[in-house]
Length: 287
Image (cartoon, rainbow, N blue to C red; front, side, top):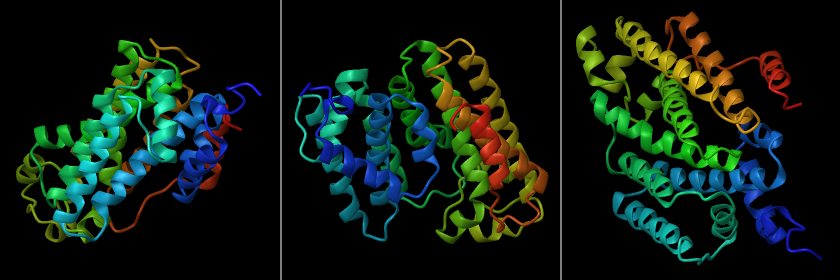
């Protein structure tokens, strides 16, 4: 049997274990990656599984003294991968993805740094520069890994990651204002809150009449990043950018629905109806 009989030449049990993590997350990511060839698809599953694991460490109810060593252990695992060492299904599949698609060590470490930001403090009304750093670490780092797994390692693909990652993360922030407030977090930028007279307090901001004005300013920032991402995608391998186009179109549609709602009731979570998800999947060739 050829060493390439399975995607990435990985052990089937390892592939199954990683895929189980992705399926259990219950997101549209699993279906969205179906457009990719098997090697690239399973590389993305491993990247997602890594992100899911470190994100869970940051989000769980535990003391910082417990979280930091576990995040540190993942830094050590990433370093070990770049010395050819892996210890479990996720890292074994990641090792093969790194070798096949030249994934960069720093992008994994940036993601862990982003999770550490969330673990170390309850982020409330960050300055624009801190918010941008947070978006770069928790979203753009994943984008930089993803575009390489998709099949484009060019400088323009990194520009797609730079813009699209920020657009997606800002959209998530706007959609999750109420959910974040329940966790005593407020990711809206302090400068925008101050300009509109909104208190830098998660619960107080949630019911302030000027909150929609702040959200509209963040939405305008996200809209600009979506446009930048589209411009960069036009300079990339069109086949490789298929998943990125789908993600961009899906989140842009969510942002449009948020803008239409005017954030009149931020406790009402906005999502896309099933027909629109199907239409987007058809448009971008995922069905």
